[in-house]
Amino acid sequence: MTSAARTLTLALILTTFSHSPIPAAHYSPADGIGLQQDDQTNVHIRGSLLNSLNAIQEKKQAHVAFLGGSITEMNGYRPMVEKWLSDRFPATQFQFTNAGIASTCSNTGAFRLRRDVLSQGPVDLLLVEFAVNDDQDAHHSADRCVAGMEGIVRHLRHYNPNADIVMVHFVNPEMLELIQAGKEPLSSAEHERVAKHYQVSSVYLSREVARQIKDGKLTWDQFGGTHPGPRGNQLAADMVTELLATAWKLDGDRGKTANCLNPSPHEMPSQPVSEPSLDAADFLPHNAASNVNGWTLGIPDWNALEGSKRERFTSEQLWTAEKPGAELKVVFEGNAVGAYLLAGPDAGMLEFRIDDSEWKSVDLYHQYSAGLHYPRSVIFADGLSPGPHVLELRVSASSNAQSKGHAARILAFAANAPHGSN
Image 1 (tube, helix red, strand yellow):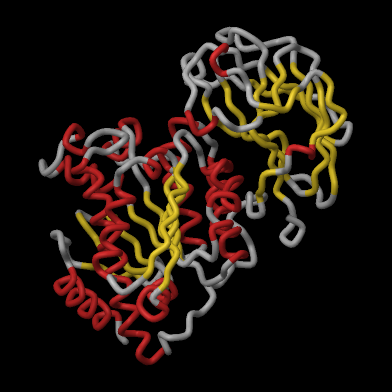
Image 2 (tube, rainbow, N blue to C red):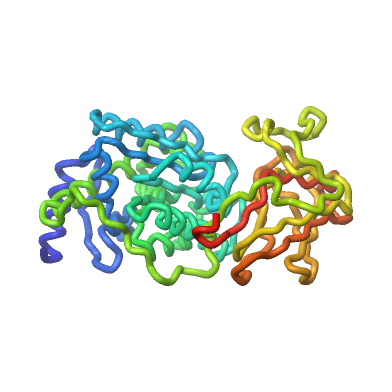
């Protein structure tokens, strides 16, 4: 099919399936198919989404998972997309997994992918968003943005090479200002690098919001803010479902000659975007800790602790230490090790070393710790050589000037182990 023919075909598809105004399409062989608006492509269809269509339309059973922060967890775009799928394919039995946890970044998402998504069964379609939290919560560097998002993509594709993925880039006021100034926020730019490398489709909601505000069709208040209101979530859901409807129809037409009944694995690039990625990250069992001195494993007396607590964490067992000098060891295998923890008003600092190397320190106190036991992840080390390692931790006598104590409350240690060993 010629480029002109592809363009004409897609234009006809959009006319047939559009449920909200979409401008004419533009096809770029180097970057997949995009819906182009004001010289900005806000929806990218890359590779194929035919495998998820096969599960939905042919097998009549499909597992659709949503991974992200509070924007995913909330009653927002996610249930709107779920409803669209259920209404459009009433004969299909859908399993929907809500793996959104407020405040979590892409690194935490990589840590918990196995527990919160893969454990629920083979995934046919994953929708993932972490642009906002990588920006405003984690303040990740470019490398950390890539490590988390690339880890999620590679881990899922190792687990199920047929799984389709769609990234959605949401927006906060600071990110919006950058886009309006003609710049790209770091987090979405790095996530998009990953999307292009793995031919993953993406929805640039952030750019679409900026475009509509510029055109006088939307205000930030109407969108609803960082956690979108009904209008903002509907816009996000419309863009996602337009992408799916367009990709599935286009792939369906191609599939008549490409045997659409036989799902095919997505190609896994031999080289990642960046090393190391968290492509085999997983939580370690609590008994991975040993040589424990000054730490306790149990449920804290949350009523006695200052600061808000999120209910999802109040019944979980944690490794807790509140006095300087408390120490423990964690034996692990893999090229990276970290911890998923709660950092409240009394969050302290941890000193750590790997394999008897030089001691280093990490401040657990977060910008949101003053009033909340805030869930966050820290990476103690990455880029380690393959094989077993020993992490030593001890509570430092130093602490953040804003902190009221020296506490460390660890939900789980995590390591990036070789596939087949976790």
